[in-house]
Image (tube, rainbow, N blue to C red; front, side):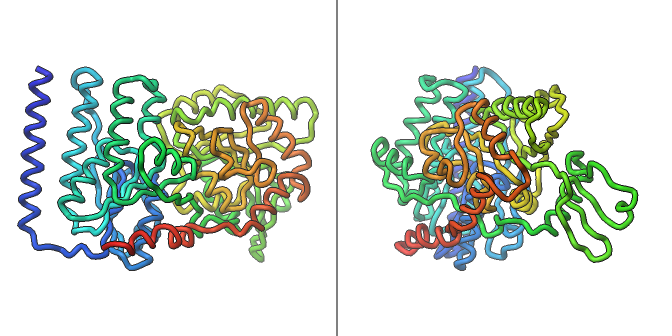
Length: 468
């Protein structure tokens, strides 16, 4: 029965695709010169690099079809651009009939039909710029769409999909091995390839015979240090929903003449903002709450930090903000709720796209727990933190040195004990403008980091000029 159902579904899928092709051929040609379809089989609002691609293309006068799931609101710059059109793809959920393998096969087939149909409805593009992962089935579908449109296919390799699958299934699972074969085979059919590290560039060439150009993630222009006045307004906004941002105490004499948060005080007479006396240190970590980030490492380090204070070490209290959405968020929130800290407060908000860079630019230290499933990609969250001149403690993996320079712009740790010691060392004497934390920030501010626009113009724009 299951096999018969799959055959029927395949037949229906073929009919739909054929109908879409015939229908599209009857439409007048839209003229694809210069247009680009930027596609990701994922949530556009949580795909910043693809949003950056779309904005860069629009900045150079290209019409852009930005295709993906519309679950989270994209950045306001994307929404305001007259050159970018959002093309929604429905997120398929609830396929729960039969064994898991059968469910997965059915989901891939339906996604393939859905994605191809959507790609054939858009105005004719000169290029399809596709994010991988997820590449199954999007790489093959994009390749077929490019054949139909006579377009060029550009794959932006953020990681390998099969290594992410192996986190749940193991490297030798049949699905993982099929996914690996699929990525290598269809990846070779692309016209151009981008990747996020030199290590991945080398791996693509050696193991897949794919020639790629490294386009490092770079912060957008709005990732920068946040002025104190904007910090205060952000804290006031967050204090409405999150207890850690509310003022610890307000004197009777000052309460009528000032507006307080846990971190700042604004004089209501002249609007002057100062940092609150005895303010806590603000620690931030962003995450997709998935298996490649073990947040128990951070929680154990915070327990040690609390113990240091109880033992008399002169450390500030902490507000730890962990931002993001993902499947393990409820699990870790359950662990957080079991902790009873006296000197540490933790909250896990989901921030609006415009508020996230403001909070990074207001924080004292970032923590990154991203472990690459392939060992070949870099955490974009650290890129954004560095754009805000925010020092980082990041957990070690193979090619992290391409981004985090230990003891120069941050620190690299391997376990919770090492992270706890780093937190103690960095926050001793806080908030004095001395010590390693301040030196890391000075180094980041002085580094004159290349921004996304300049990097994109140097790396991607020449590719688009080779062929329309």
